[in-house]
Image 1 (cartoon, rainbow, N blue to C red):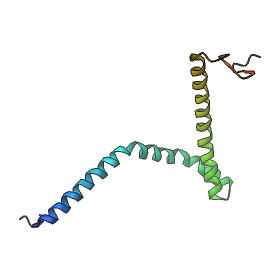
Image 2 (image 1 turned 135 degrees about the horizontal axis):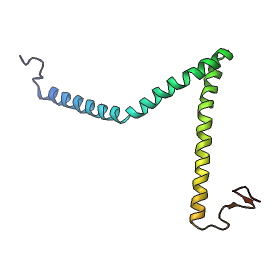
Image 3 (image 1 turned 30 degrees about the vertical axis):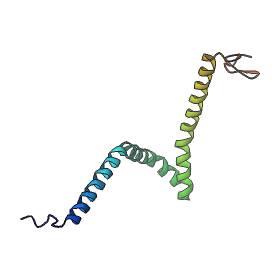
Image 4 (image 1 turned 90 degrees about the vertical axis):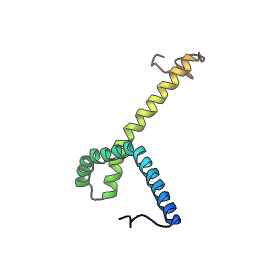
Length: 111
């Protein structure tokens, strides 16, 4: 009835080790579920862009590169703009010289 249970102490230790590895792997997988979901969403969201570019361009690599560039470039520009805005606000909160101005140029656009 209990033929599947290990009869030796060493085998029981190995099964405990395998169980601990399984628990660790399950915890890591649980921690990464969000990233996997974002990755799958990104894949399916960019497929139509890739298909249109692939029809117009013969090279799969160039079409994939352009697709990634069309997605990444606006994100990078948004992050840079946000970082610049944060820098401006922190600079003005700290009372930097000529808050709202960057060197000789006005950040707000008035000269």
